Length: 262
Image (cartoon, rainbow, N blue to C red; front, side):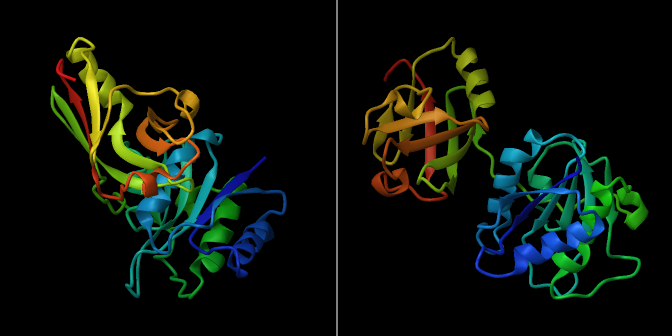
């Protein structure tokens, strides 16, 4: 069954989501449309990239991912279809796709360059119909001129030495958990270099001496620190909102120090 996922900052109180879905189904009423989220903060490409990165690989290869989140006030922007990790992405060339993977795209196509469509609702007039066609078996290269690459943004990365990983809070989720840019792969590599020495996790005035495997490893009201399903260091309060109770905000620093003196 053909699958199209849909991610936007449209919210749920207006007709916009339904209108885009209708434009997809007009091309093929048998397409399975999966909503990822329509509660992305308006224009927040970083938020959209985080959510899409968290889930797109869980779908079968060949899935078409339509995203409608605009971060620009430019009158004319490129709209693209991109093949990346054997998935297809359709949306504005805002840099969002570059935050999903370190791989280079297998194909990038300017889908609105030959006969430009000018519309205040480009997701309905261009993205939706194209997603329907591609999910039904059409090749993205049939719909425009091939480009060399996509627009690129610099992702927020943690800094690592043999003795410390220094990262930042990059996202606060629905539960008030704090997601950082510290990756488990980096932690594992440096911990091995340090012969599995003790470590301490520092943020604000808090010091945590061990990583947890699950939220329930601590009692209600206590702080947990673990690597989530995306391999990112996550901080929270069991049965509470960590962002409020710990006083952490997006951009705040988090450190993992590898030392015998804990």
